[in-house]
Image 1 (cartoon, rainbow, N blue to C red):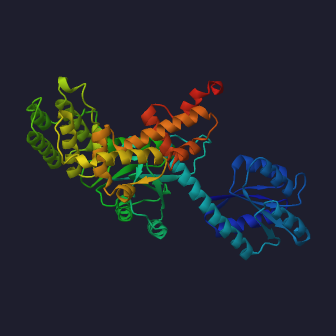
Image 2 (spheres, rainbow, N blue to C red):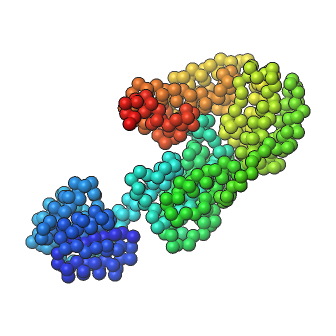
Length: 506
């Protein structure tokens, strides 16, 4: 609804304009009729309308003085001057001062229609931008905007969380960019909105391999969320990977959006499966703990402290087959992998190896076949089993070329394609060689270089803007940078900067 206040000292004109608006435009409502600029200013500050009609000549405070006072208070509300021909020169002056339009007395319905149509278009565009920014901030920052403005009042909201491949930790995937989803045409979104009478916002999720679709509509409007979700799925499909969709509950109170977001992410963490497509609706989670699968315990129970390569291959292949058959969730997979890796690390190996991170292995494996290969590689590294097929002798110099290039270019926008173009091998192969030589993946290595540079920048430049830090070290988005920094350092970038400049702490 677009809210209007009319400031006019002639009651007949004020009532006539009010009737023209309310009887012919159902999406406009007149909040108040005021007799002079002083009363108008008070009502405008109290009710904060979207559109103001005001006469110029009124007793006490005139219309132009009232508008000047509003502008001095940083209110850029759309204002339309009501004027007769004798006052036309004042109306022209008012327009140069920021008044959006004028309406000649007596009021011509066609002119009023043009003004209201323009106002509606601009209002809808502004409101859409505000709602998109509001939703994006809640998704990435998980906080309610400090100004208390709630652009989704009287609206229902449902969130659809799309993941391309496994749910990935920020630590492992924010550094090498890949186009996980096909671009969505604006016309396709508009067609869906028109068909279902909704507003649809496509937003960034908390990871590069995630998109979020927010469906909003008036609270009173019934929606077929299942049907709408299916049609959105046709628009948002990942490139060459399995995908997961988690559909949140629907809220009618926008102040509950943070809780809605947290619940959806928590549900996805515990319920999204690995390696297969899935579409799920959020449900309440039980307090039942996640245990290591009995089958994995049984398989790992036969591990000796010096198994053969064939034994390891059979063991890992059996585990992969079990997980595939059971269609385990990613969280269950993580639990089982931690157990299986710890079972391989006997006492005499604990001080000799670099511990593999199961979360990283899952995050960077798009399929069961990739995960099997990575897990076997890590197992052979644990037991010191040399295999020329893993690390050919003639490739030793190659990984140092990769490292030297990363040391010089880690702030650039690095894509998977760059590795093939520069070094003649895909990123997965080079990552295997890199980890064997340096005990860390290229993606994680880039992340550490960027975060170390970020800390140095913040330590030496206490007044630097976080968005500038993010851009300088290679992140495309300040929100992503903040999430990665906090996940790695245990403290937000802003808190880190305050610690470097204790005088600002009150």
